[in-house]
Length: 192
Image 1 (cartoon, rainbow, N blue to C red):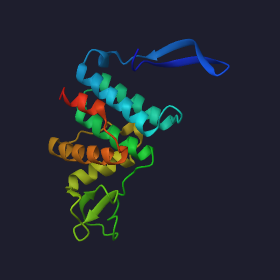
Image 2: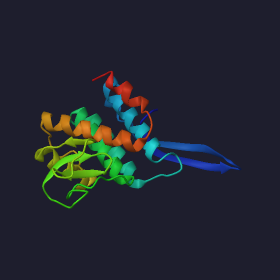
Image 3: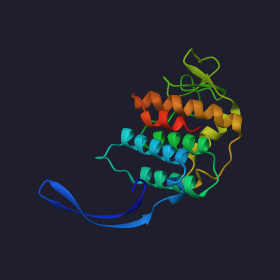
Image 4: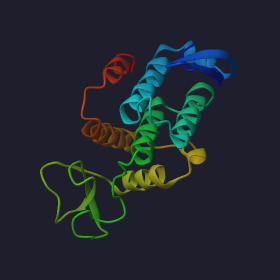
């Protein structure tokens, strides 16, 4: 079943791997009964395939995925926050962490915008046409999401305006690095 987490026992018969046994641990059942949550989790799955593929397992990405599925299934967290946090944390875990401390160009600490091409934040003097203006509050939440431990990723509540601004930035940044169309995102957007 989709999203069912457990222990798989495989054996190799020549060049083919066969499944011997499976012991389920968690099925995240509440997600299975909500189309928008299911579409969102499908989007998360596609992102993992895009940034890791089958041949590159990663324990931290698995932990992020499982914690996000758990939060989606059992916690009262907005789907926009789940999506935003998952996108940013996945990008960081797979080597696409934006520079968020100081201006990517000159090192100034007075941040004004986020730039997809510079992979980070810029000051007012270095801003360009590809920049997205970012508020101080959004910058604080961006820094929190990127720097916090995965266990504490959903231990906050983002105001709606900030959530919308960061969601826009995260989605554009992710699409820039994915360098392809993400069909499950279009499907998910039909439910929101």
